[in-house]
Length: 138
Length: 66
Image (cartoon, rainbow over all chains, first blue to last red; front, side, top):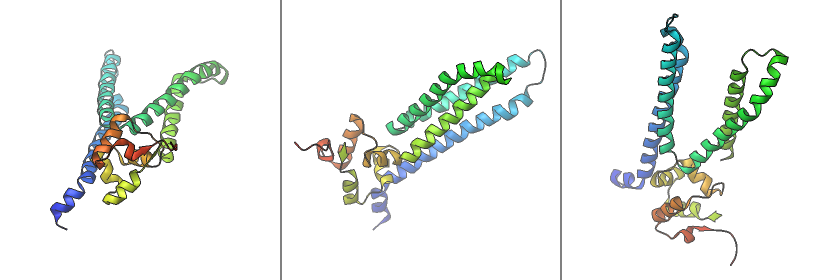
C-alpha cells in the first residue's frame, strides 16, 4: 500500500492527533497562567499603598486568561466531553452549596481561620473526583 | 439504545481513533457511544450515518422488537 493510500485511510487519526495537540497546548497555557499567578504574582507586586489594586488587576488578567482558554476548550469539545464538564461543575457547585453553610457553622466551633478557602478546596477535590470517576466509567 | 458501530468500524478496518477523527469527536466519545454509555445527539447521529453512508436507523436501534 502506498503512503498516499495509507494517508487516505488514516486521515481521521491524523486529524484526531492534531485536535489533541491543540488541546494539550491550550491546557498547558492555562496551567502556566495559573502557576504564574500563584507563584510570581505575590513576588511581582511590591507591598505598598498600590499593592491591592495591582493584585486585583493581576487577578482579573489571570481570570480572563483562564476563561478564554476554557471557552476555547468548550468550543473544541464534543458532547461527551461537555457532559463530563457539566457534571464536574455541578458536583463542585453542589458541594459549595451544601458545605458553605456547614463550614460557616463549624468555623467558630473548630476555630477555622479561612472557611471560604476550605469550601473552595473541598469543591476542587469533589470536582476532581467526579471527573476521574467519569473517565474511569468510560 | 443499541448500535452497530463496532461492526461497521471493523468492516472498514478503522480504529476508534480513526472514526473519532472522521467524526471530529474524541476517542472517548466513540467508545462511550459504542458501549452504549452515551446516546449521541441527533446531529452527531446524522454525522455518523454520513461517515458510514447509511441511514441512522441502519446503525442505531432501540433494542425493542417491532
